Image 1 (cartoon, rainbow, N blue to C red):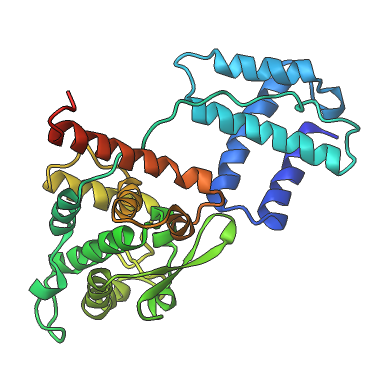
Image 2 (cartoon, rainbow, N blue to C red; image 1 turned 180 degrees about the vertical axis):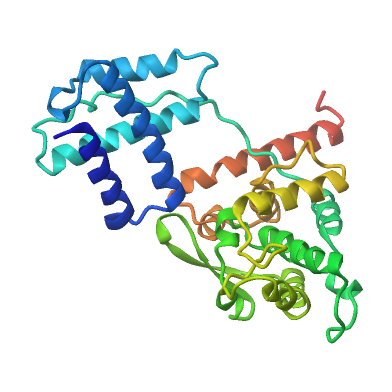
Length: 314
């Protein structure tokens, strides 16, 4: 089969039949476009001509580029290539899978960086006014307060649920209409139910009653919960800018990334005694092994306390 046609077939498969997210499919598309271009440079335009040696050479070539590709990106690239060839073999397009012996690179264990509880409170306070400090519900907020109410609700919800930024910006108003729980659609369109604390609930209610109607009037009607300044659905990139701006005002910019509140959510739950399996469910991790990295953060915190508190620690 022609390489380009094979890639298109595989991407349709992972998008429609496996239901992978748009972001994941887009990443696969970029990886396989790179693979296809490399094969074309080698004079290969049909999948039947791809051998295990060629696959290994492609990976070695990508690993040797300068500046070097991150280990995580190289691992994903290999995963994309393996997925394509497994698909072609399983569908009977090719008799064998030339990527069988491909092994992902060993990635260094990097502990996620979490904020302290005090730092989270600083970040939230810098994002916008708490509901208790806003005007009466029937009043019309000033122009600046419209977006600040939204920003506070956004960050409160991120920390309260541990959801990914991409999951939060995809929420509809109906998704937060179930009282103290939130329905989140995660990777692979899998749904999970996450509790929402009183602080986040109050911030979202204040945004819905006092800010979203004004933002909605500025654009076309949409069911999305979070809206931009012009009334369109808030994008993932815009949500990231909201977080970064709040971090700068709180003087926490060196510590904050789009995933920081998710990391902080998991770390604080484990430090508070939550079972790792419960945290796995709340985060929407398919494997508990992914969640267990946060237990190392807690162990590090224990070591710090021990080192500073025990008379014979040093």
